[in-house]
Image (cartoon, rainbow, N blue to C red; front, top):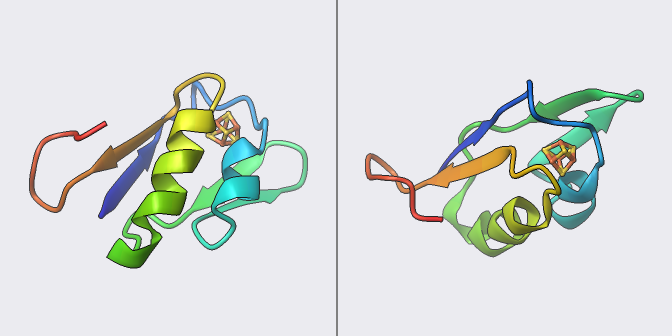
Length: 69
Ligand code: SF4
C-alpha cells in the first residue's frame, strides 16, 4: 500500500504517529518521517491514522489503483 503525506499540509499534530507508529514517526517538533510503502497488514492502522489527521494530509492508495479513502 502506498502512502503519501502532503507535508505542506502536515502540522505535526502527531495523531498518525500515535495511531500507526511503524509507519509514521515524528522527529523533533515538526519533521514527519513516514514509510511510503507500508505492508498490507498495517492497512487498518494506516487508515485510522489517515482518518485521524486533523488536516487530512495523509493519502492511502491501493497498489497501482486509485485513492481508496
Ligand atoms: S496527523 Fe496529519 S498533521 Fe499530524 S503529523 Fe500526521 S500527517 Fe501531520
